[in-house]
Each structure stands twice: as C-alpha cells, then as structure tokens.
Length: 169
Image 1 (spheres, helix red, strand yellow):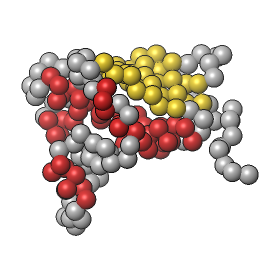
Image 2 (image 1 turned 45 degrees about the vertical axis):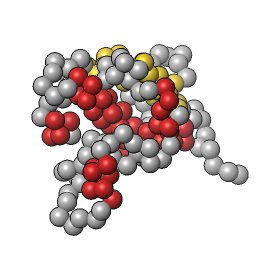
Image 3 (image 1 turned 30 degrees about the vertical axis):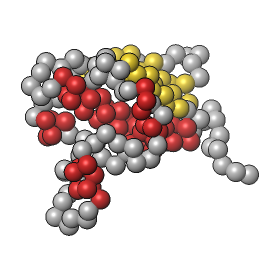
C-alpha cells in the first residue's frame, strides 16, 4: 500500500521469536499488525519526505516459556505523535488522513475496488478496533510516542486457552 501511494516504502525488519507459534485468531492478528505497519510506514514517509532514505520499521516478537503474553513491538522513526493527540488516537473517527481520502471512502463509488486500492490512512477506525481485538482476548495495545522522533506500539497477546472470553454470564 505504501509503495502504491508513495512509490517507495521503508524496509520492515522483523526480529525476535520468528519460529513462534501460538493459538490466536489469525484475522485479528493480521488486522492489528497491518494497521500498525500502515501507520508506521505512512508516518515515516511523511516525516522524512518522498524519495528519502527511510529508517527501517522494526518489529520485535518477544516470548519466553514463562511469559504470560506474546508481545509484538512495532517501532518507527516517523516523527511521533503530538502529546495533545495521544488520547484522541483511541477515538473512533479521529484521523490525520487527508480529508479527500475520507470523502472518497465515505462516498459509494461502484467502480472503486478497495481490495486493490485501499488507502494507507482513512476513517480513524484502525487503532481503536485493533485495541478492541487485543483486549477481547485478554491482551492490550499501547502506544508510546516521542514527538519529533518516532513511535513504539506494543501489542500484548494472551495465549488463547489461558484466559476466558469476556462474555457476560
């Protein structure tokens, strides 16, 4: 998506427990990691400018036999998030995307194929839904940001089978 929008993308370096397998809902994990990588790529390209030498986005997968969670960290050097926006990032509909992108997503256009032409940023649902997915099964999503430098996102995933779904009894 980043290559399609900007013609280039930062490299993604994945380290840590690359051999790790654990029970989890694959679509939720895919959604969460895709959202974090999209945000990091967009921030990095916007911060450094098109045709720059981009610093890599670093993904670390941490796990140990005694760890209660699998933790995935996504780090970028995309300029960070202003502290005044930190509470807003968890609100549905908060976005820093270009208003033209929002209008294009809201307006129904029969000829658009969003499976092929999905935007890099959009309506402001990505982070709130990602955090809800993580929390539903006992995990969490937290964001630490240094304005002027970059952002670290931490996804805490409880191994399924160790906790119960938070359903009312």
